[in-house]
Amino acid sequence: MADKVDRSKRESHFPAIEKRYGEPMSYWFSQMKKVKEKKYPEQIAFLKENFGFSQAHANALVMFTKGSKSSRRFETPKELFESLDKNQAKKAKEIFSAIKSSHPKLKLVVAWNQPMLKLGDKYVFGLGFAKKHILIAPWNPKVLSKLKNRLAGYEVNKKTVRIPNDWKVDKKLLKDMVQETLVSLPKK
Image (cartoon, rainbow, N blue to C red):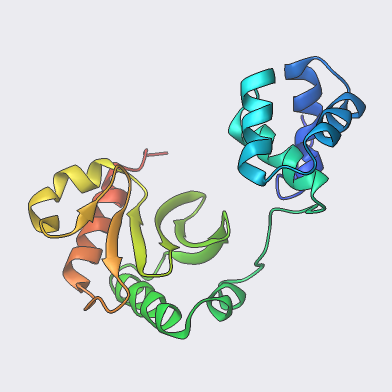
């Protein structure tokens, strides 16, 4: 049985980088020295364009060489909410409260440094934050297609819906998004 790898540690990607790209980490660190004065996007592009790195591997190497040893910034939803603008934090709590009132078995967690709701080991719903808006994301993007008529007037992307920071929480819409996602989960 394989050991569980902690993907929050950037160096956990190193064995896969060595195997996939055929060079030891010392080689990759020497390559990063060549672009150490460049900005993050340029360093990522350097690895992707010259060596065929995936985004995840490029990000792990770039961030590690910049001194970030962990991708985890928040251990708890409380820590995450404390890092947000107070109005966004309040809105996020209101959104999760509306969902959990209909689906109390969902657990609020932090994943990818964003607040997410899970049922067991399956992600169901999450939020993302930008300065002027919040992204709501049912875990199954097909839900957005199914609820398309009810999302008229919103900016709908492939997997998210952009809402303004002052959005009047539509509890029925949120409940239905989560219910549709739960219905689509694979049965055990």
